[in-house]
Amino acid sequence: MRRDDGSLPIEDYGVISDGRTIALVGGDASIDWWCVPAPDAPPLFDRLLDGRDASGRFQIEPTAPYEVRRGYRDGSNVLETTFTTAGGSVRITDSLNSGHAGRLPWSELARRIDGLDGEVELAIDLRIGGRLGTTQPLDVI
Figure 1: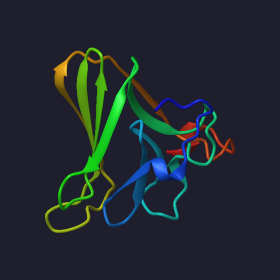
Figure 2: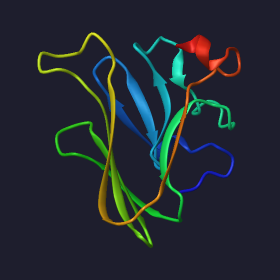
Figure 3: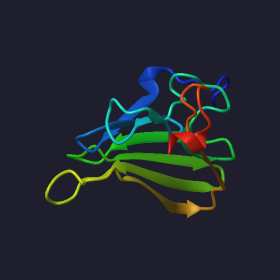
Figure 4: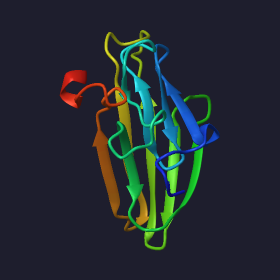
């Protein structure tokens, strides 16, 4: 699932949530939308609205051609994306976390990478959104 113009159809996104806000994770394991710490906050990642190269996202993707399989862990909103390349396979697990007593007083995004077999080279691209070009990323934080 390679992007040609930076965009994915909305049906290619999975949703993770901590009960306060949501993040949208593309089929290529790119988090393209996340308003933090609340749904009405400016987006930290905003590529969903504007697929340009400068848009905010947190993408982890194999550098080689791949096949992808995705699904949620049973009984949870923890999303697992498994990439298989000619050289091996890797699983990326995504969640927005809560504490044992409920929501945390902060937002916590967790991304875990597990090598399953062989070797898979990954490209990691973390870009803070610029509110659709209205600000510099350092102003967002």
